[in-house]
Image (cartoon, rainbow, N blue to C red; front, side, top):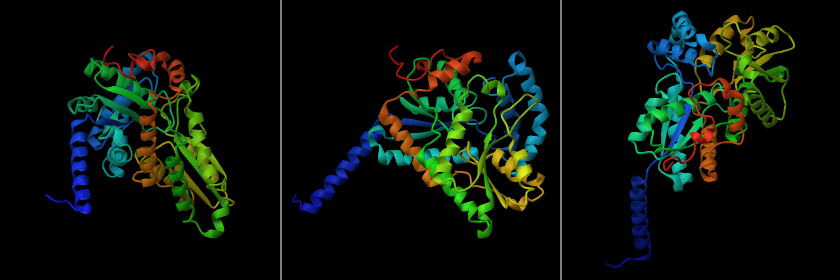
Length: 387
């Protein structure tokens, strides 16, 4: 058989592609696991979600009465929260967006980092389906040997990222006692370029919706989920890291507008981090010298009940001048953001690091009251298959 130069090139390219495809199929996939609080995808899942949430002492510490109070609060709050989910379409969209984002990240990684391909997307929620244990079982069936636990809280808190980490450890001991999966952890990314650029672009889009003559009298309020002061006072890094994200976004915007960081979603009578979003908005929206307020959900990577109901419905209904209030879009399917996530995972895989330099101190300060977890993060992360 006689080849011309072009036909030889095409034949060799086709053979190389088949080889790569066969090789990739034979390789164990690299798991990319988006870890988050989650939310009930349907209204009927609300009670179980709330019970798991209030049962978590890492998130809301109730001490020895944790289980009793969790049952009481979940039962009491379920009817109201079910109604809220009905009002935003019958459930939380966080699973949809998490699966969408993770799938797209893996597609980008297959192209940009073939050394660790194929990359397989997974979502592991702390309080809603798919739960950590269900996702881990699926990964074991899929033959995953290397996995990245990727916290979808850009700013670390022991109560959120730490809680997901602890649950992963507990379920690993139960379901993967031989430690067949080699885990590493992306535990924080408050200044990631894609995150910052996407937020800045969404803010600019909202600013353009105000009349040009009013744009010099706009205030930006960055709203993040609050945290009990019990946790803050342990030395939790979350408040500082949220502030880091806010400052990076304002740098991108050249500090053209006055801004503040405020806190939402306080639950119960105990002291939480403030000032509260609703109270600060209530003060500012009444002023004639403020023509607009842009709310930015800076600690969330997609829409869920705190954006779609707490900000878009509850807060606006309480305002005297709701026309002044606009919310910047959540990141959801933002391609700049998703490309940033893929770059972050690529860099993490290439670096070989197990977790950030901050995580050990996080565990020392935040893990004093944690139950059934490790003493040191190296007990979870790294290669334990031969130990």
